[in-house]
Image (cartoon, rainbow, N blue to C red; front, side, top):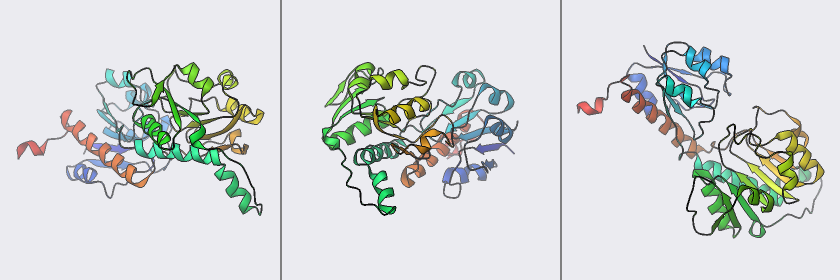
Amino acid sequence: MSKIVISTSSFDVTNNPHIHLLAARGMHIVSNDYKRKLTEDEIIKLLGQDAVAMIAGIEPLTERVFSSAKNLKVISRCGAGLDNVDLIAAKSRDITVLNTPEAPAQAVAELAMGLILATLRRIVQNNFLVRAGEWPRMQGQLLAAQLVGIVGLGHIGLRVARLCQAFDAKVIAHDPYIETLPHGIESVTLKKLLAEADIISLHLPHNSNTHHLLNTQVFANMKQGAIVINTARGGLIDEIALNEALISGQLGMAALDVFEEEPYNGPLIRNDKIILTAHVGSLAKESRQRMEIEAAENLLHGLIKANLMKDEASDD
């Protein structure tokens, strides 16, 4: 019996018709019992040498993983990002890698928007102070009065830009891979965006070129009081430098949903000028359902294309 691993930390197997179909066709489905992001050693152990395919989360899928999982032929990412997958190593071993770029986009964009509004109006701080018996009259800021800089104008970044425009905010963006920007969004250099934007929202992959894109020097050159939002990938921001910039007052506020090491347990936890969420960008019920169903459907088609499963529909 061929094995399929579902390594993402949460996955609704019960209500996924494509998983039922795979099981009915003799596939052995193995899930992630840790219910968290797996380490390299843990994913190697879970895959073993008999897994032919997997629905992946954000665990490291490296050359070492692929060299151990000798029969692995299809990876279907439950999500958009592929920066946790060594694509060169996968290609060299004829492993097909698929993803679901559109499915989580609205959920992540809405979280980013929520974080922008929460930082501007100091919603989290007000909540805690009221619960502590205080009655703060904390003055916030209007989104309509801000210049919002979007770094990365793909599926998610474009949605965030449009949501900000709906609040009458002016939007600038930097994305070297997009030639024509939608109406009302000005294309600028990254340097100009980082120096002039009141709010900076990151929507790009993490790799060697974008590692610590926001660092001590960049923070120092930002507009004083600027707000930084990251719902993209941990590693884009130097978290130590971010903490220092918040403490010094160079930055006004920040909000992070992603971190270099997860679960996060660093110094930002003790900083009341930042909102921290536990990598929940795609965890909206409707978006998550769509993402999981698309990931399983992609896996099914990948297995058929790799001749690991018969396409029964072609026999009709």
